[in-house]
Amino acid sequence: MGDVAGIGPEVIARAWGDSPLRALARPFVVGSRAVMERALACVGGGATVQEIKQPEDAEPSPRVIPCLEATELDVADVPHGHVDPRAGRAAYDFVITAIDLALQRRVDAVTTLPLNKEALRAGGIVHPGHTEILAERCGVSRHAMMLYIGPPAGAGSSGLGVVHVTLHVPLRRVFDLLTGEAIEAKIHLADQALRPLIGGRASRVAVGALNPHAGEGGLFGDEEIRIIAPAVARAQAAGVDVTGPIASDTLFGRALSGEFDAVVAMYHDQGHIALKTIGFDRAVNITLGLPIVRTSVAHGTAYDIAWKGRAETSSLIESVRVAARIVSGRRQLGLPVGAS
Image 1 (cartoon, rainbow, N blue to C red):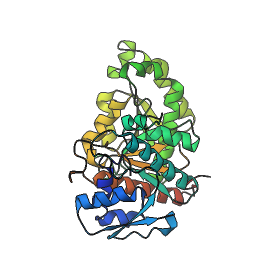
Image 2: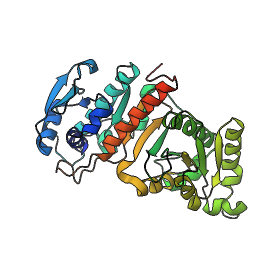
Image 3: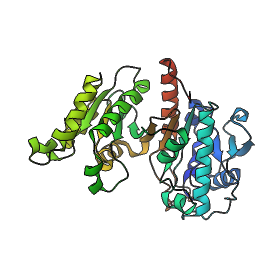
Image 4: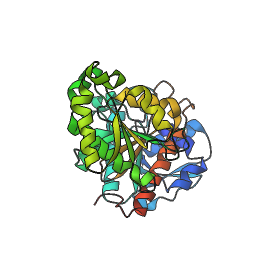
Protein backbone atom coordinates (compact mmCIF):
# COMPACT_ATOMS: atom_id res chain seq x y z
CA MET A 1 0.00 0.00 0.00
CA GLY A 2 2.90 2.38 0.62
CA ASP A 3 2.60 5.63 2.57
CA VAL A 4 -1.05 6.06 3.56
CA ALA A 5 -0.73 9.87 3.40
CA GLY A 6 0.29 9.65 -0.26
CA ILE A 7 -1.40 8.46 -3.42
CA GLY A 8 -0.74 4.73 -2.95
CA PRO A 9 -4.12 3.67 -1.52
CA GLU A 10 -5.97 5.86 -4.02
CA VAL A 11 -4.02 4.36 -6.93
CA ILE A 12 -4.93 0.84 -5.79
CA ALA A 13 -8.61 1.74 -5.42
CA ARG A 14 -8.74 3.33 -8.85
CA ALA A 15 -6.74 0.57 -10.57
CA TRP A 16 -8.94 -2.16 -9.12
CA GLY A 17 -11.71 -1.26 -11.52
CA ASP A 18 -9.39 -1.88 -14.48
CA SER A 19 -9.63 -5.44 -15.76
CA PRO A 20 -5.90 -5.66 -16.73
CA LEU A 21 -4.88 -5.71 -13.07
CA ARG A 22 -6.90 -8.79 -12.21
CA ALA A 23 -6.20 -10.45 -15.56
CA LEU A 24 -2.47 -10.34 -14.85
CA ALA A 25 -2.48 -11.89 -11.39
CA ARG A 26 -4.54 -12.77 -8.34
CA PRO A 27 -3.75 -9.60 -6.41
CA PHE A 28 -4.43 -8.61 -2.84
CA VAL A 29 -3.43 -5.59 -0.77
CA VAL A 30 -1.00 -5.66 2.13
CA GLY A 31 -1.89 -2.64 4.22
CA SER A 32 -4.75 -1.22 6.28
CA ARG A 33 -8.37 -2.12 5.68
CA ALA A 34 -9.59 1.17 7.13
CA VAL A 35 -7.34 3.17 4.80
CA MET A 36 -8.40 1.06 1.83
CA GLU A 37 -12.05 1.77 2.61
CA ARG A 38 -11.32 5.50 2.74
CA ALA A 39 -9.55 5.26 -0.61
CA LEU A 40 -12.57 3.56 -2.17
CA ALA A 41 -14.80 6.32 -0.83
CA CYS A 42 -12.42 8.86 -2.37
CA VAL A 43 -12.51 7.44 -5.89
CA GLY A 44 -16.07 6.15 -5.90
CA GLY A 45 -17.30 2.88 -7.31
CA GLY A 46 -19.07 0.00 -5.66
CA ALA A 47 -16.18 -2.19 -4.50
CA THR A 48 -15.81 -3.36 -0.91
CA VAL A 49 -12.78 -4.42 1.13
CA GLN A 50 -12.47 -8.02 2.28
CA GLU A 51 -10.12 -8.44 5.26
CA ILE A 52 -8.09 -11.63 4.92
CA LYS A 53 -5.77 -13.41 7.35
CA GLN A 54 -3.56 -15.13 4.77
CA PRO A 55 -2.88 -14.89 1.02
CA GLU A 56 -4.68 -18.13 0.33
CA ASP A 57 -7.96 -16.50 1.40
CA ALA A 58 -7.80 -13.83 -1.31
CA GLU A 59 -10.62 -14.01 -3.84
CA PRO A 60 -10.30 -10.77 -5.80
CA SER A 61 -13.10 -9.63 -8.06
CA PRO A 62 -14.15 -6.32 -9.64
CA ARG A 63 -16.19 -5.58 -6.51
CA VAL A 64 -13.98 -7.13 -3.80
CA ILE A 65 -10.50 -5.97 -2.76
CA PRO A 66 -8.84 -8.50 -0.42
CA CYS A 67 -6.69 -6.75 2.19
CA LEU A 68 -4.24 -8.32 4.63
CA GLU A 69 -3.98 -6.14 7.74
CA ALA A 70 -0.26 -5.55 8.24
CA THR A 71 0.21 -2.96 10.99
CA GLU A 72 -0.86 -2.57 14.59
CA LEU A 73 -0.88 1.21 14.24
CA ASP A 74 -4.13 3.11 13.84
CA VAL A 75 -3.52 4.94 10.58
CA ALA A 76 -7.12 5.55 9.53
CA ASP A 77 -6.94 9.22 10.54
CA VAL A 78 -3.45 10.03 9.28
CA PRO A 79 -3.64 13.48 7.60
CA HIS A 80 -3.40 13.33 3.84
CA GLY A 81 -0.57 14.96 1.93
CA HIS A 82 1.83 15.43 4.85
CA VAL A 83 4.77 13.64 6.42
CA ASP A 84 3.53 11.62 9.38
CA PRO A 85 5.59 9.22 11.54
CA ARG A 86 2.70 6.76 11.74
CA ALA A 87 2.52 6.62 7.95
CA GLY A 88 6.26 5.99 7.76
CA ARG A 89 6.22 3.20 10.31
CA ALA A 90 3.11 1.60 8.80
CA ALA A 91 4.65 1.66 5.31
CA TYR A 92 7.62 -0.21 6.75
CA ASP A 93 5.30 -2.76 8.38
CA PHE A 94 3.48 -3.27 5.08
CA VAL A 95 6.60 -3.98 3.04
CA ILE A 96 8.15 -6.24 5.69
CA THR A 97 4.98 -8.34 5.72
CA ALA A 98 4.99 -8.57 1.92
CA ILE A 99 8.68 -9.51 1.78
CA ASP A 100 8.20 -12.27 4.34
CA LEU A 101 5.27 -13.71 2.39
CA ALA A 102 7.46 -13.83 -0.73
CA LEU A 103 10.37 -15.39 1.15
CA GLN A 104 7.97 -18.05 2.42
CA ARG A 105 6.82 -18.62 -1.20
CA ARG A 106 3.26 -17.79 -0.27
CA VAL A 107 3.18 -15.16 -3.01
CA ASP A 108 4.96 -15.13 -6.37
CA ALA A 109 5.87 -11.45 -6.44
CA VAL A 110 5.62 -8.17 -4.55
CA THR A 111 4.63 -4.86 -6.15
CA THR A 112 5.11 -1.81 -3.94
CA LEU A 113 3.47 1.60 -3.88
CA PRO A 114 5.58 4.63 -2.90
CA LEU A 115 6.77 5.47 0.57
CA ASN A 116 8.31 8.71 1.81
CA LYS A 117 11.90 8.74 3.05
CA GLU A 118 11.27 11.57 5.51
CA ALA A 119 8.22 9.80 6.93
CA LEU A 120 10.25 6.60 7.32
CA ARG A 121 12.87 8.46 9.30
CA ALA A 122 10.22 10.17 11.42
CA GLY A 123 8.76 6.73 12.14
CA GLY A 124 12.07 5.48 13.49
CA ILE A 125 13.19 3.54 10.42
CA VAL A 126 16.86 4.00 9.55
CA HIS A 127 16.62 2.69 5.98
CA PRO A 128 16.23 5.41 3.33
CA GLY A 129 13.87 3.45 1.09
CA HIS A 130 12.39 0.23 -0.22
CA THR A 131 15.58 -1.09 -1.81
CA GLU A 132 17.58 -1.00 1.40
CA ILE A 133 14.73 -2.55 3.39
CA LEU A 134 14.41 -5.34 0.83
CA ALA A 135 18.15 -6.02 0.76
CA GLU A 136 18.46 -6.31 4.53
CA ARG A 137 15.34 -8.43 4.97
CA CYS A 138 16.42 -10.77 2.16
CA GLY A 139 19.99 -10.93 3.44
CA VAL A 140 21.72 -9.77 0.26
CA SER A 141 24.54 -7.29 -0.25
CA ARG A 142 24.82 -7.43 -4.05
CA HIS A 143 21.72 -5.75 -5.40
CA ALA A 144 20.62 -2.94 -7.69
CA MET A 145 17.59 -1.05 -8.93
CA MET A 146 16.59 -1.31 -12.58
CA LEU A 147 14.28 1.23 -14.21
CA TYR A 148 12.44 -0.64 -16.96
CA ILE A 149 10.01 0.18 -19.73
CA GLY A 150 8.48 -2.76 -21.53
CA PRO A 151 7.45 -3.00 -25.17
CA PRO A 152 6.05 -1.14 -26.96
CA ALA A 153 8.07 1.78 -25.64
CA GLY A 154 10.10 3.13 -28.53
CA ALA A 155 12.73 0.91 -26.98
CA GLY A 156 12.98 -2.07 -29.27
CA SER A 157 10.83 -5.18 -29.24
CA SER A 158 12.03 -6.25 -25.79
CA GLY A 159 11.81 -2.94 -23.98
CA LEU A 160 14.73 -1.36 -22.17
CA GLY A 161 16.12 -1.59 -18.65
CA VAL A 162 18.57 0.79 -16.97
CA VAL A 163 20.71 -0.29 -14.02
CA HIS A 164 22.55 2.38 -12.04
CA VAL A 165 26.01 1.95 -10.55
CA THR A 166 25.34 4.80 -8.12
CA LEU A 167 21.87 6.03 -7.26
CA HIS A 168 20.68 8.27 -4.43
CA VAL A 169 23.92 10.10 -3.68
CA PRO A 170 25.15 13.66 -4.36
CA LEU A 171 26.67 13.99 -7.80
CA ARG A 172 30.05 14.99 -6.35
CA ARG A 173 30.26 11.59 -4.60
CA VAL A 174 29.76 9.59 -7.80
CA PHE A 175 33.46 9.88 -8.68
CA ASP A 176 34.47 8.39 -5.32
CA LEU A 177 31.93 5.57 -5.43
CA LEU A 178 32.64 4.47 -8.98
CA THR A 179 34.72 1.28 -8.88
CA GLY A 180 35.41 -1.41 -11.41
CA GLU A 181 33.96 -4.03 -9.10
CA ALA A 182 30.69 -2.11 -8.74
CA ILE A 183 30.37 -1.62 -12.50
CA GLU A 184 31.12 -5.27 -13.24
CA ALA A 185 28.58 -6.41 -10.65
CA LYS A 186 25.88 -4.22 -12.20
CA ILE A 187 26.66 -5.57 -15.67
CA HIS A 188 26.11 -9.13 -14.47
CA LEU A 189 22.92 -8.18 -12.60
CA ALA A 190 21.54 -6.48 -15.73
CA ASP A 191 22.38 -9.49 -17.89
CA GLN A 192 20.65 -11.96 -15.57
CA ALA A 193 17.65 -9.76 -14.79
CA LEU A 194 16.58 -9.21 -18.39
CA ARG A 195 16.68 -12.85 -19.48
CA PRO A 196 13.22 -13.82 -18.13
CA LEU A 197 11.80 -10.77 -19.94
CA ILE A 198 13.41 -11.50 -23.32
CA GLY A 199 12.78 -15.20 -23.79
CA GLY A 200 15.88 -16.49 -22.04
CA ARG A 201 18.49 -15.32 -24.54
CA ALA A 202 21.62 -13.49 -23.44
CA SER A 203 21.01 -9.81 -22.72
CA ARG A 204 22.72 -7.16 -24.83
CA VAL A 205 24.16 -4.69 -22.33
CA ALA A 206 25.52 -1.19 -23.00
CA VAL A 207 27.67 0.61 -20.45
CA GLY A 208 27.52 4.38 -20.32
CA ALA A 209 30.54 6.64 -20.00
CA LEU A 210 30.93 9.08 -17.12
CA ASN A 211 32.59 12.04 -18.82
CA PRO A 212 31.67 14.04 -21.95
CA HIS A 213 32.66 12.23 -25.17
CA ALA A 214 33.58 9.20 -23.03
CA GLY A 215 36.56 11.18 -21.74
CA GLU A 216 37.94 11.91 -25.23
CA GLY A 217 40.96 9.67 -24.66
CA GLY A 218 41.60 11.13 -21.22
CA LEU A 219 41.29 14.81 -22.13
CA PHE A 220 37.98 15.21 -20.25
CA GLY A 221 38.62 12.67 -17.51
CA ASP A 222 40.23 9.26 -17.32
CA GLU A 223 37.59 7.21 -15.47
CA GLU A 224 36.67 5.49 -18.73
CA ILE A 225 40.27 4.32 -19.20
CA ARG A 226 41.08 3.46 -15.59
CA ILE A 227 37.78 2.06 -14.32
CA ILE A 228 34.95 1.54 -16.80
CA ALA A 229 36.69 -0.08 -19.79
CA PRO A 230 38.54 -2.69 -17.66
CA ALA A 231 35.26 -3.63 -15.95
CA VAL A 232 33.58 -4.07 -19.34
CA ALA A 233 36.50 -6.22 -20.53
CA ARG A 234 36.24 -8.49 -17.49
CA ALA A 235 32.50 -8.94 -18.04
CA GLN A 236 33.12 -9.73 -21.71
CA ALA A 237 35.69 -12.34 -20.69
CA ALA A 238 33.06 -13.87 -18.41
CA GLY A 239 30.72 -14.29 -21.38
CA VAL A 240 28.44 -11.25 -21.13
CA ASP A 241 27.39 -9.54 -24.38
CA VAL A 242 28.39 -6.06 -23.22
CA THR A 243 29.61 -2.95 -25.05
CA GLY A 244 31.14 0.23 -23.67
CA PRO A 245 31.89 2.71 -22.39
CA ILE A 246 29.59 4.61 -24.74
CA ALA A 247 29.25 8.41 -24.64
CA SER A 248 25.98 9.47 -23.03
CA ASP A 249 24.88 11.63 -25.95
CA THR A 250 24.66 8.57 -28.24
CA LEU A 251 24.06 5.84 -25.67
CA PHE A 252 20.29 6.00 -25.46
CA GLY A 253 19.75 6.69 -29.14
CA ARG A 254 21.39 3.35 -29.86
CA ALA A 255 19.56 1.60 -27.05
CA LEU A 256 16.15 2.93 -28.09
CA SER A 257 16.75 1.76 -31.65
CA GLY A 258 16.79 -1.80 -30.31
CA GLU A 259 20.56 -2.38 -30.29
CA PHE A 260 20.62 -3.08 -26.54
CA ASP A 261 18.31 -4.63 -23.96
CA ALA A 262 19.90 -2.91 -20.96
CA VAL A 263 22.01 0.10 -20.12
CA VAL A 264 24.34 0.39 -17.15
CA ALA A 265 24.32 4.06 -16.14
CA MET A 266 26.96 5.59 -13.90
CA TYR A 267 24.60 7.82 -11.91
CA HIS A 268 20.92 8.50 -11.23
CA ASP A 269 20.00 11.18 -13.75
CA GLN A 270 22.03 9.65 -16.57
CA GLY A 271 19.54 6.80 -16.66
CA HIS A 272 16.37 8.29 -15.23
CA ILE A 273 16.08 11.28 -17.54
CA ALA A 274 16.15 9.15 -20.68
CA LEU A 275 13.65 6.51 -19.59
CA LYS A 276 11.23 8.88 -17.90
CA THR A 277 11.26 11.10 -20.98
CA ILE A 278 10.14 8.29 -23.26
CA GLY A 279 7.57 6.83 -20.89
CA PHE A 280 7.21 8.26 -17.39
CA ASP A 281 3.78 6.72 -16.87
CA ARG A 282 4.98 3.27 -17.93
CA ALA A 283 8.30 3.12 -16.11
CA VAL A 284 8.70 0.37 -13.52
CA ASN A 285 11.35 -0.19 -10.86
CA ILE A 286 12.70 -3.74 -10.53
CA THR A 287 14.98 -4.69 -7.64
CA LEU A 288 17.78 -6.96 -8.85
CA GLY A 289 19.79 -9.46 -6.84
CA LEU A 290 16.96 -10.52 -4.51
CA PRO A 291 15.70 -14.08 -3.96
CA ILE A 292 12.19 -12.74 -4.62
CA VAL A 293 10.49 -10.85 -7.46
CA ARG A 294 9.83 -7.22 -6.59
CA THR A 295 8.58 -4.43 -8.82
CA SER A 296 7.47 -0.93 -7.94
CA VAL A 297 5.83 2.11 -9.43
CA ALA A 298 8.34 4.70 -10.61
CA HIS A 299 6.57 7.70 -9.05
CA GLY A 300 6.59 9.05 -5.50
CA THR A 301 3.96 9.69 -2.85
CA ALA A 302 2.79 12.88 -4.63
CA TYR A 303 1.56 14.53 -1.44
CA ASP A 304 0.45 17.57 -3.43
CA ILE A 305 -2.32 15.63 -5.21
CA ALA A 306 -2.90 12.84 -2.71
CA TRP A 307 -6.53 11.96 -1.91
CA LYS A 308 -7.89 14.42 -4.46
CA GLY A 309 -9.05 11.84 -7.00
CA ARG A 310 -6.33 12.75 -9.50
CA ALA A 311 -3.83 9.89 -9.17
CA GLU A 312 -3.01 7.90 -12.31
CA THR A 313 -2.94 4.10 -12.31
CA SER A 314 -0.80 3.24 -15.34
CA SER A 315 2.47 2.76 -13.44
CA LEU A 316 0.86 0.37 -10.95
CA ILE A 317 -0.77 -1.70 -13.68
CA GLU A 318 2.51 -1.83 -15.60
CA SER A 319 4.39 -2.83 -12.41
CA VAL A 320 2.05 -5.77 -11.90
CA ARG A 321 2.32 -6.65 -15.59
CA VAL A 322 6.13 -6.72 -15.44
CA ALA A 323 6.11 -8.75 -12.21
CA ALA A 324 3.85 -11.31 -13.88
CA ARG A 325 6.14 -11.43 -16.93
CA ILE A 326 9.19 -12.02 -14.74
CA VAL A 327 7.48 -14.82 -12.82
CA SER A 328 6.30 -16.46 -16.04
CA GLY A 329 9.70 -16.07 -17.68
CA ARG A 330 11.55 -17.54 -14.72
CA ARG A 331 9.25 -20.54 -14.68
CA GLN A 332 9.74 -21.12 -18.39
CA LEU A 333 13.51 -21.05 -17.85
CA GLY A 334 13.28 -23.46 -14.93
CA LEU A 335 14.40 -20.79 -12.47
CA PRO A 336 13.00 -20.59 -8.94
CA VAL A 337 10.29 -18.10 -8.04
CA GLY A 338 10.56 -16.92 -4.45
CA ALA A 339 13.19 -17.77 -1.89
CA SER A 340 15.24 -20.93 -2.16
